[in-house]
Length: 154
Image 1: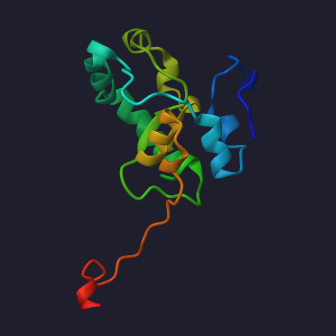
Image 2: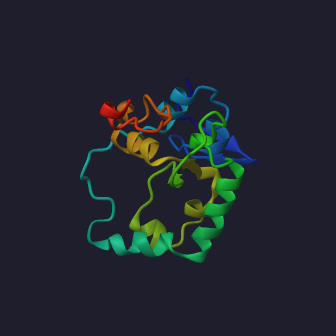
């Protein structure tokens, strides 16, 4: 399994502990990719507190929408860029490294850099933030059949 470490990306130094796409993509196993991204957060922990409007304004900006499209295309709309795990519902673009109010207010270029972004499903996003693998286990889609919810009609 890959660990976070000092690396160079496209000739630039990446800080120790920073997660990045060029390292993630080298990890073959879906579960190992999850472990690389896992944050071990807590349910209910505030991200932006009373300044949450900054977060919402940021995600509605044209600059964000442009980079979001680029990341979806790069990752083929697949969970953690794993072609074996196409995302069936909403695609979330996950910042591999936590962002802060300061990052948004100062328009830190890293928050728009695809090197630090990845496509994930809602279930994977929750698993990454809350450290609960149950969110991503048993991801198989159950094929529906006529009357499968009406046992008396089977």
